[in-house]
Length: 297
Image 1 (tube, helix red, strand yellow):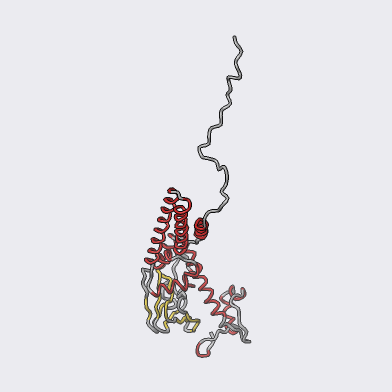
Image 2 (cartoon, one colour; image 1 turned 135 degrees about the vertical axis):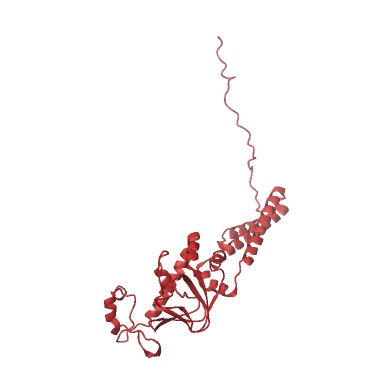
């Protein structure tokens, strides 16, 4: 038996030729200015934010970037594939710009709702789409209240809605004594709304009178809670604006509270806030709140 020929039996595999060519050398010169301008626009575009205006910013800069890429591919690179891809992406970005612009024009509200959005919701970053859901919940209705008419009567009117004053001025009284005014873009019933759970019912503990012709928007309690269940973001926004409104009302009352010596009394003090009803009755001579006509409450 002859010994095997190890030289003929060479099992070492020859390296396969690379499918993609390897760069033998880098170009000394840089690409043209259009190439760099395209990437600057793309960089700025990807820094866009959220919402309709963020989308408009994003796709506008992407369209400019892909336009520059198309010009560069046509004039400098002379590559059909690069030009076609860049031009297709330019068309897609331009279509998105037109679509977002159309949606921005279609989301519009009447003057009073537009002012409500500007004063209460825009500063919180609420999008027009979410505000549209809020307006739809009240059916876009604006209600009126004639002078010297009551919005709510102490101990009688049920708490079944949440309302915001759009125009006019409302006077708040308790037991016939003046407490404070409610001005436009303030809630009419924020303390009452926040005092009840969704399953609870209650009545107003104050009376609300219209000092002059008033206009307000009201959301029915059940419909608003259904909206909150559907959009948790809107629920958080309402919780924020309602409690901020309550804090402003408390501070307005705090500015009117003085003790017998004329010093301002802080309603936030635990000794006052957590005082039992029997102890509160004893503070009548200590806590005095000036009211109309020079009387004290």
